[in-house]
Length: 348
Image (cartoon, rainbow, N blue to C red; front, side, top):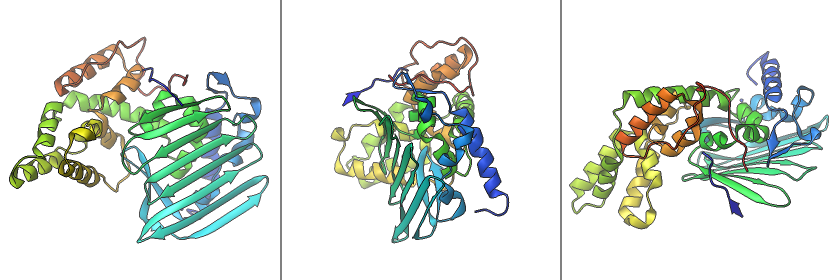
């Protein structure tokens, strides 16, 4: 495997029409894109006439599950699921969904297939997600593997090679190559999230992050690491205080916690950090504001999104990063104000 380095449930009458229109727009927006630096063959490009192919009907019509985007990761809403199996096979489209549950925590297996393409979605215990998109003629395949905790991996493969990217959220992964990401997963994720576009959410999050950086007030790396060190202090009082302080600081501490080396942590530190990460998770869908708070101290995300910002905004971001205790961004081309612009570089 060759690792790539980063370059920088129906809802009433009318629901079907709304979904058809939404998916037509999505289909139009992700045509004529390239993968592995090669243009997709004509029969692998999405078009309005083939929108039914990308219409996972069961997610909008059966009400068997409800997906959420929480801290940039897909998950199933545990209270809103119904066990069972449904399938259809019509007009050249085969689709099936199975929902199971263990102690109220749902799992899902979903497949959509046509003569040209296959999509698979598996969810275990609500938050462990595997998405696979494959073009049958060329053999080109994309896989997203999201563990319950830890980095998400996006892999692209053909008969010759396998390339991958790792990121803390789906936003990180999409930013590496928006067009290829959307070709494989854009329409499906929009359906799972009931019409919410990951692209628009990212545009709005970029604006919110700049404002969050302008306001400041988040703890510095050194402060967070001091509290992590205190999780191994000699007294219970010190350990408990550090635990509470990290929780009180909220989601801005998460990028620092994710970057820690487990080899340097004691068993109690690891257990407390897992507890902090779990307790900082909400059960409410992401908003640009909540994502900005989560990502404002994530230098890796600032780095891959730096192309969106103008010179003044980059200076503001760098000031925030230095105050936070991180290195400023690498040299960035700022030919124009590109916040909320849909841009990206191809995976190579």
